[in-house]
Amino acid sequence: MKTKASELLKMFLEQREGLLGFIFALTRDREAAEDLFQETGVAVVEEANRGTEVRQFLPWVHEIIRRRVADHFRKKSRRGSLEHSGALDEVVSLAFCENREEPAKVHQSREYLDECLEELPAAQRELIEQRYRREAPLRQIAATADSTEGSVKVLLWRARRQLARCIEGKMASGGEE
Image (tube, rainbow, N blue to C red):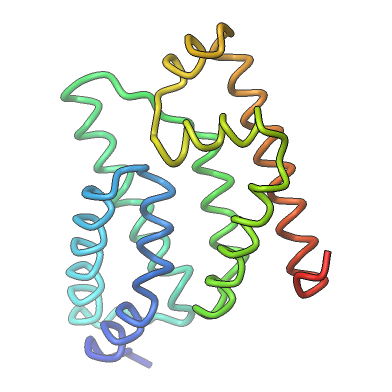
């Protein structure tokens, strides 16, 4: 059964917030995320016009996004050096694939993220803030903390793991943790 371009585009636009979040998590660049979202929309319509059969929309569109993001980084790396954490991308990608949630659940998990960030020790919270909100490079964070990039990566991994456990706990208990 072929899926009409209009149906796919409607599904794509309904998932805009989650898909943009997915792209941003992979690129850490708001402008690039918006551009890649638009490119993905064009690709969705082109695939539908070719008669591509789509059984599961989100896994299908996530694969298109992954390819677009990979192309983006290949182009960007040709223009200069790129600091990019492949391990984090895999974790984020897996998280989005496993959690095909409706927008209300996505909003709720964001609230839990904010709550869990507040529960982190101040030093870990500051690392997360520097890396993901201020988009500071590892090199800069390490210099500020008078540490090595490797140590910062380990500390960030531990903080992300703690955040994930906290969010999962709140999701499981309905936020009553």
